[in-house]
Amino acid sequence: MKLVAITGGLGFIGTNLVPLLMQSTGASVRILDNSSNPSGEFEDRPGIELLKGDIRDADRVERLVEGADAVVHLAAHTRVIDSIEQPALNFEQNTHGTFNVLEAMRKKGVQRLINASTGGAILGEVQPPINEEMPAKPASPYGASKLAAEGYCWAYAQSYGLETASLRFSNVYGPYSRNKSSVVATFLKQIRDNSSVTVYGDGSQTRDYLYVGDLVQGVVKALKGSAVGVFQLGSGQPTSVNELILKIREITGADFTVRNEGFRAGEVIHTHCDISKARQALNFNPSVDIVRGVDLTWQWFRQSA
Image 1 (cartoon, rainbow, N blue to C red):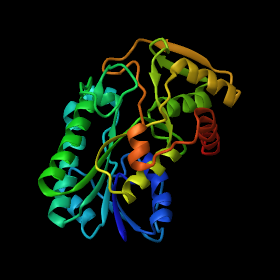
Image 2: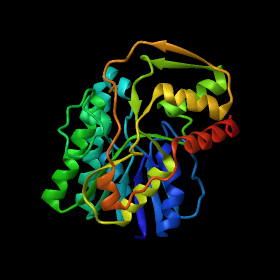
Image 3: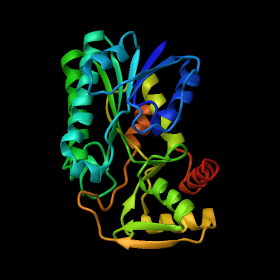
Image 4: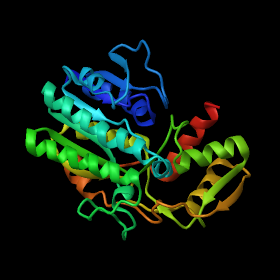
């Protein structure tokens, strides 16, 4: 690969992915980002071209993919609760935006796509561990939009011969997550700034927390390989919010209070994933446990304050 195009490359995942991708493949990178939620800066970095724009702009997306050997599609509207409040915006960014990426690839003759997707939100409230064969019953517009995006990826693979892999990310955390509203980032910011965290529900709900360094390794392996279809990327381990809070207390040594509010509509209560398919097809082997990962993330937040 000589050139990889990335949507949303200035976000949390992209900021962690780009250096590893360039080092691992030797490829140059072209990024399309609307700068609405940047986590990093790549200005004046050799081998990186930045395009200002939005995936809802079909012409801009065509400019992004022109001459690329592969595309990593990260740009998305990712907040479950916001998708309930603004379902049309969620659809336009996630479903229509993904359609624009696929259509641009078809027109410009680009074959390989790594599509960032999600697991729990697509499947809804099902008995964990979740896997790729479970029927989808999304509980929010966000989950529905990501399911539709996966469907278009598969349809373009069948109809036009594109090589598409949709990676269902679990609850990703790590450095450069200053703008993330996910639970680990939110808790660490609240502890650092307010010495208090807010838990929606009783804290018994479980998630599969994946360190971003392990995630981007998986993305690069998928990009360099030829596997197609849907793959779960997670730690494979459930952790409750209450367990997470205990670990954070031990890691940070901080004295903070916990305030509970009601469960929020559209959120899955229990989820973690079976990653055996990704292990086999992508050689995906996460190695950073949650204690080490949260410690690395906390150190980054303290240094970036």
